[in-house]
Image 1 (cartoon, rainbow, N blue to C red):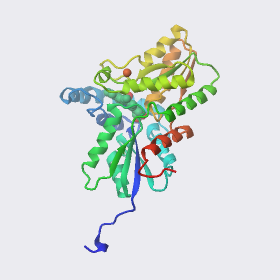
Image 2: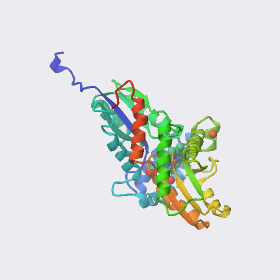
Image 3: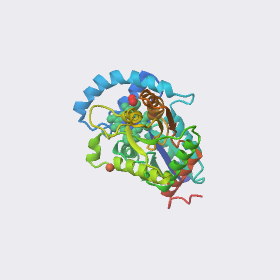
Image 4: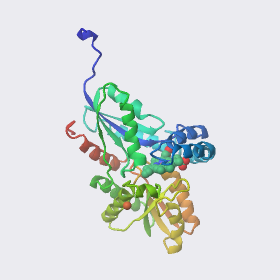
Length: 334
Ligand SMILES: C=CC1=C(C)c2cc3[nH]c(cc4nc(cc5[nH]c(cc1n2)c(C)c5CCC(=O)O)C(CCC(=O)O)=C4C)c(C)c3C=C
Ligand SMILES: [Fe+2]
Ligand SMILES: [Fe+2]
């Protein structure tokens, strides 16, 4: 082979792939059904033998839930599309160039689009021989962090020339993350015209069984809340939201807590969702809309939702710090 015949080799680069959960392509029942079908067929998410689960999923869940969920998505959809996708894209834009000219930043979703396989292939084609996979979940959970990494390794299994891979560790107790949350809560509280009697931190729930089987998620959530409470100098109420199915989930539940608080004298609350790196259906519809309705319906007088870190200056500085650290030895981050 002459040098001219050799396949082209682009200049070597490093890639960072931001990964979040995924969202439907449109707020209609057909798109939601496709998305939920993929999401809820993941064995890391629903740990019931497929032979038992698939008939329930196909026969009940996917015939009833998509229409209801599509309505909920319609309430939070924006001109830029689903909030989760729009915010993840904005985080990627803000981080592009942040680690120097040799580092490309891209984004992907575990379910739906843009897919992890496509974006890994694009980074590799652009010359990234080393890729940091960054699932944007502060608290490790097999149903989120592990499945995102599994999907990336599945894509690598089909590649002749694999990039070298690193994965972003959970950052639930990272001082940069706690400091970013503290600043966000303080700014959120300063903008209110009331002083909350309680601050709730609501984390996505998981079946109680996953805690018993050794998933560190519950402990990571509690530690985040403890450290944030210490940083703020006040105790926080920890709750778990978005219960799904009949099994016992982590408690206390966000919805029942919001309904119970007014009777205990807590009439003014502020709520945040520190486990979500981007606002999405679960925060904007479940907390900001339905959470407020349940709290006020039960006699609460003041309710405030404090947004996720999203692509705020504060949130981006935190991501830059935790991602930059993982690139050590690959590049000199400026
Ligand atoms: C068994 C069901 C589910 C488990 C386990 C689960 C874990 C889990 N999920 C997130 C983050 C998100 N979940 C989102 C939506 C969502 N989650 C479930 C079910 C489980 N989640 C469903 C059915 C849905 C879809 C919406 C609905 O029909 O209610 C989202 C938002 C997606 C969006 O498009 O905005 C996020 C983000 C975590 C962090 C987690 C475990 C720790
Ligand atoms: Fe979920
Ligand atoms: Fe725990």
